[in-house]
Length: 120
Image (cartoon, rainbow, N blue to C red; front, side):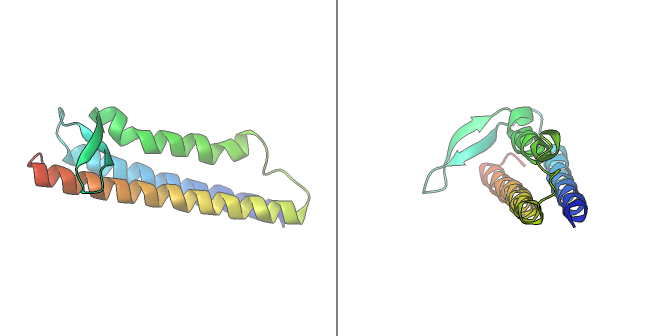
């Protein structure tokens, strides 16, 4: 059971990273070279902080890679305790889904903001 949960956790992490990478690549192709990427918005929807295109579009994918692969790299998933294996799997699944959704929401707001500003 522990091996199955480890493999399923790896699969979910890979799927989340694929979604994150694909959406970042799609946004990269759509956004112009010298456009700065909004990263934070105020309550009224105005961008508060911006980064250059490479940093703005690759921030979440790089964080996701570090976070999702840290479980495997630290060998935290290699356990013989079924309860611990289940908890680690559930944590990995939750983090993978959260990171993929944060990428999707972030890019949705980026595209909307850039369209409103006339940069797309």
